[in-house]
Length: 417
Image 1 (spheres, one colour):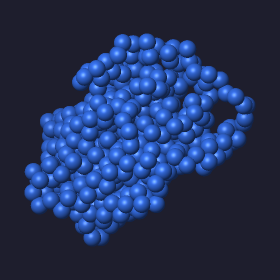
Image 2: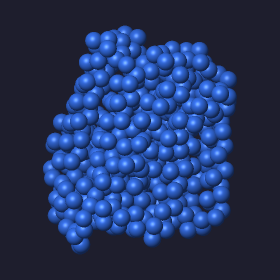
Image 3: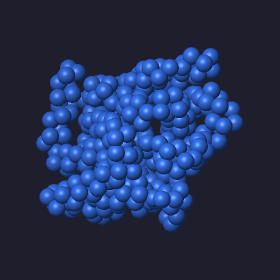
């Protein structure tokens, strides 16, 4: 049974032309949800630059940079299914508020350690692990609540706008963090990061409760988890989309964690140039997500999704072999656009094909595929140290292209989706 207020979006007047790109923002509850996400994304993007620069200058190790980044993956794999069950059983908005408050406290603790000059790599490692626990409990609810805020007919638009907000922060956040590292230092940047996470809590507090889903059957926690996995196993479309998400997360996204290596060692530049590289990804991502928001519910989305994955792999090969900094920025515009559009479209297709009462559990499995990015950083970081970062990213891009072609040829159901 859906929350009563979910019928609100369908009563809003239709929006045509370019304005339909932002139609979900007409929904008041979604606007606060979106603002909350943007605040958190901004802090996260700044943290990527500040933490990456801090770790790499402390250790000079691409492998250690990868290990700290990947540390959140293990708790996500273990706790993730429980997060989905909880999201299906409790009020999602309250669960999100609790988890985001914990994120603020972790960021505050790291900030204090940096300010008093007591920060160690193991502190950042522990924070990454704790963040993985919070991520596992938070993200299934954050994903599953979207249809309850905007309705099914605006789902693609809402998810794409969420990605657009994230990508605006990719443009501003990294560049600003790169500049501020040289102006106010790592301690000052982390203070701003903590403030952004606090803004996430304040924004989500404005979102009203959406109600608890009425379950058809009463099961214990383990039975609920097992039912979620059985649901995926027997649902071909969802199963294939999750496999694709795992592949692209393992091979495609880890390149971002090696941006400090490209900035300092490949192009011989500083933290401000690291911010420019990350911002180029953000600019491309913004156009990619806004384009998808404008398209909305279009036909042959499965075929389009495969095309995005293919271009993602080709873009990684081009970027990792760039000889000039400006050419690298242009390549990252392409990579950012196709990668974010593919992420948002795959997310939409999964949510749109899942029954309401099991969304939290399916999205927890979906979140588990995100750990592939952190896991993929480890072999990529090791290979970067052994053979060079350009070779490592090129290999990942080539494998992504190859596997996309194989799936497109062997799974006709996906092409026709």
